[in-house]
Image (cartoon, rainbow over all chains, first blue to last red; front, side):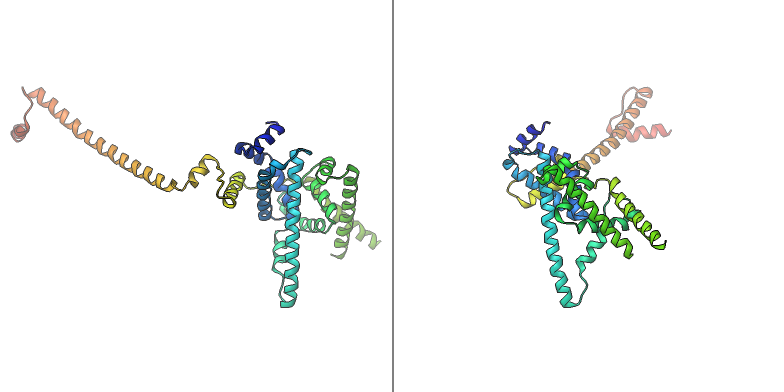
Amino acid sequence: MQESELIQKLQKGDQKAFQELVNEYQVKVFNTCYGFMHNRQDAEDLAQEVFIQVFQSIGDFRQESSLSTWIYRIAVTKSLELKRKRNRKKRMAYFKSLLNLQQNPDELEDQQFFNHPGIEAENSERTRILFESIESLPKNQRIAFTLNKIEHLSYKEVAQIMETSLSAVESLIHRARKNLQDKLRSYYTQN
Amino acid sequence: MKNQNQNNKVEHEVNHTLSLLSDVKRARPDSGFYDRVLSRMNREDPEKRYTESPLTALVLWPRFSYLAAALLILIVLNSFSIFYYLSDAQTVDDTVSFNAYVEQYMTSAPGLYDYEELEDKLDE
């Protein structure tokens, strides 16, 4: 089915078209969410939310970008929103734990699941360090780097999703890589 | 010299860790993702019911358990009837062969009340 035809059917609330959309994009959306959340359950919940939002707001989609770009944008926005909420909650829990002199349970939980199924288990420790380093990058660098390296999107696609220029994405990814090298260097020097 | 070795080792670790990104495979959701999305849509908006795949929709149908129970009872009754019919057919076969025997050795088939007499004759 052509993209324009798919969009038309979706705008009419056609459920078969929605099923086709989910089948085509589920791995892309799930993997993108996983790239930001590093947790299977969160990625599943977020991916479901992304498709529900797509179904509910397809009527507002003005086709100024491709359907894929629009869906990726929703996935990235939702992932960052949840991440922000989690960080706020974690900060609160941290302060509470300081007051109660207890260990922060969320932090322990995060460390436990900080992994990626696309990387072999024998590299799990390296993966944890790598994703922790990616996590600490500035927001735009993190988005560009995750979309390019984890979701394997081209610079052009990343630029469309982030609504920025190609050179800006090149620069973001270059800086992200340099920052990562510095962080990893610092980690391996200390350990 | 020791510092140089240490730096080389660190650089090696950094490059090795970064190289993991070059062959990272995509994470995939578990199968049945579409049905889970629809179930969630139905949970969040029960007034607009979205239909799942035919099998899921059938299983989620509120009267599915009654239908399944009724079907099960029908199957059991039918099986019982078939079994009963087959054992009955065996009796009919016996009667047929008995009649054939009577036809071969006697002029007419015995009536219901002639059985006793017939059995005595056969014993002799």
